[in-house]
Length: 435
Image (cartoon, one colour):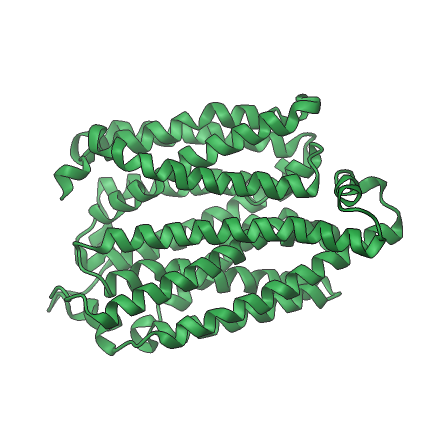
């Protein structure tokens, strides 16, 4: 039975969106300050970040399965506490094992909110307004990421400069080539990271406030279980040509993204971009996402969802090739790499809402949660595989970070070819046809 949107449903949805904005900030931290900190104190962990993401996503998917028994709110409170604790652990631990544990926990804590987003919003919205709330959630997350990356890098350089009693511009110059730092300077550089991590641990606890504003009842998280009587949910219901091919598409796409995104700050540092400009470039990527998402809806209305996904993703390939050659741009590296990052991020992420729409169309209403959990589990295995490939082979090669973009570009061409060949006839609907 379709729920009617009440004041409680609206309040719960908006509370989750507020939380999701802070989670965006945490994500910005993970792929910015935390990663460069790990490169200093635990290089093996930094180079294996994709594997940690995979393991953490799998753990988060497994925990989220408990929602029909425990409700969303308890899991959310657990995730908040785990996130704050793990950031403190990473910032203070000397043991490599404890640092690795902290990384696993912080990514698990933030990933839980990604896993629960779809079932939570679906439980508190109707079919008519669901897309609107998903869009708000996506925008809040991206804005949070922008804020997180904007605060992280500049704050780090400011702290570093203050510790050395030098100007901000001098500190920014020093972070451009870490190999030239003295032992004392490098120690201050690392300790500045620790302060930022502690600050974000405190910020993460703010999520407790909107979480306590959520008023949930059993029907919010148990309705789907009884929505189809006398039928058992089975993985066999998800076995058909389109689902198998889409899972292949999704898993390979995640593998490609996991080759390039986790190591991006390391690669940018490697090609000579200073710490502040790395954060600025990261922020510009997220502005690109906001801009391009607006135009993606118009493209879908005219060309259909399959054509839109393929066109946006394939259009990003030339910019990946530009990024792969980042070592060759000399003094123009920030201009060329910055422009390529902007367009690649905007094009690829503009396809995300359309991909989510297509995903939910492949299965009936009663099996969406199962399909979503299965995709998250497969994504986690893909991320683990990408991390192992990067650590044991790719990053051991000269210019290994650059080669990752060539691999990703090749995969994008293959998977979007699969999408066009097999999905166009049946699933290339425009938004107008879907409404």
